[in-house]
Image 1: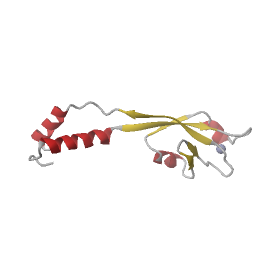
Image 2: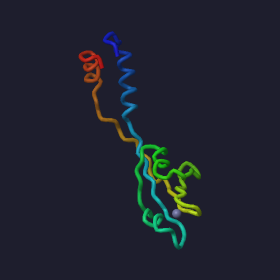
Image 3: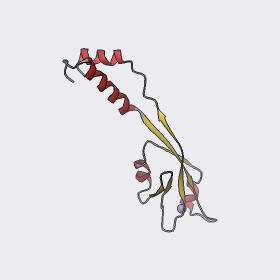
Image 4: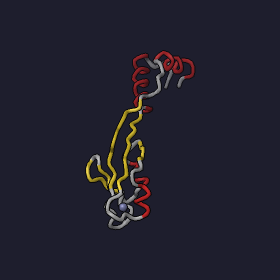
Length: 111
Ligand SMILES: [Zn+2]
């Protein structure tokens, strides 16, 4: 950012910065289904996975699919009927950086 940035522009940058570092944290619980789930699914049964976005579920279970917004089928293997349920979603507050300090950085370092 240029040093000629107006306080208004700086404040907008400040808001964007805060929005950028704010995180959503979702918790998904794995439910192994069936009387005789496979060993791998059984090992995940009841495990809670914390992710920042749905994309991370696909990183873990590349063949997964959403049944609805709160239900994800990991499809670990053919005929896998296990599913995951979103049990919570919280917004993690960004660290508290006072605007004055943010502005000071812009003025002093031009960042
Ligand atoms: Zn399974």
